[in-house]
Length: 327
Image: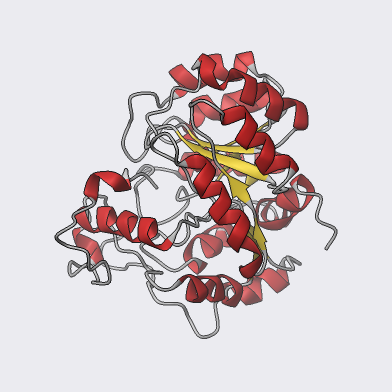
């Protein structure tokens, strides 16, 4: 969700395979019910499968799943270990994909992000060379303010056929209003390519996070197809207000309606937003970097007091339409 993985690379400790020895309850982030944590190992027969059938949801589309080169992913896990944030899917890339399919998450994005120059294009190449090995993956790339950013972003769209991009304002220390990215944003706005942006202040604020930076950005690019990660937590109300002003702004539910309170402790007041804006909200998980099974956020959405149609839209239909999938 947030680590600057390069900051935690230790050449003298190159064994990244060890499991965090601390129990989940010791995380610096609190749990809704510390005496009853959600499972952290996949069920043989996931509980949510029956509810998907009940609500006529053929499968889940996860708008917020992460894929990095293996070394970088292990460095990210090293950061999470330092804050006792357990990784439930600390396993090989192949097994992670199998876990998604086992939970009927048949389509999912390949999000990553760069924290320095000369990194984004290489991450994009990694996704391009590997995504076809990940059954159901929706190829997403990233970009960074640097020379050549427009050219390699165009390459990702026109040659690699990427379906979207991810930016992380906290990790990348990225000011969306930098003029170095203006041409790239104008290009993506014209092409109507989705961008998932972690712009909110949860779980920790960054130098350029928050509505103060995002509002002038979206006013400059009012037709940009933006999905605000984590519903903009901790400023969910302020980001939700933008939905009535900018027709292409959307939200994802990543880590909001779960028992792990990294995005806030009182989310009950936001449930009504899922119904009111059900056409503009997408299910996201943050897989694999979550301290519970992926079935937990799915079950939470399915159990909320919102209409069956809202559940279908959030978990499946909205993403189906966004990417023009026909199945």
